[in-house]
Length: 132
Length: 83
Image (tube, rainbow over all chains, first blue to last red):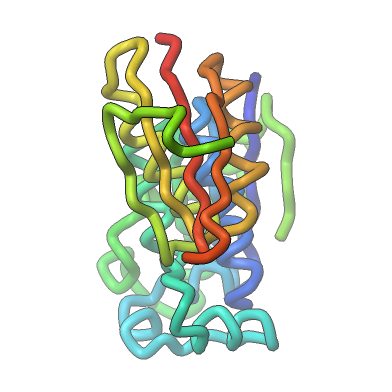
């Protein structure tokens, strides 16, 4: 199976979690996954933002974080774990970084490389593209 | 199915973890296990009852049974690795 190329453009916690869940299980099932974090989707991986749990969220996100009976792994941890289990690659959008004048070291240490649009399209050429 | 009918070689306790945690816990163990190993996955995540057997079938392993420990709020899912 050629796999999935996921464009993660949203910084909303529910969407981040959903993408990480799907990508993680796909990769753990040996389905190739490429995740391109761009715009607000990349900003969600900012180290300070993760430390402060500063995410846009709706009622489901709030419920997941506040429920003491639910031990929810954060999207960034799911993706890091998935990298150990299967064929998943994460890329940070160069444009988004340039716009904020940030370096990759300011984001969680889960990215394999920095890509522009052309680079992403090359990686996505044989895959089903999912835009979130 | 009665849990006394099934014996596990390895118990994976994922109680408290939410989707996809229990399945990822199981996959991590299955990948390094010998063929014929029986796992018991303990989970409080209700989606696991369907998700785990679904993955097990796709991966070519065998689901031996799902035991509902209703009084304690979790399920045991028994899986035997085929390869």
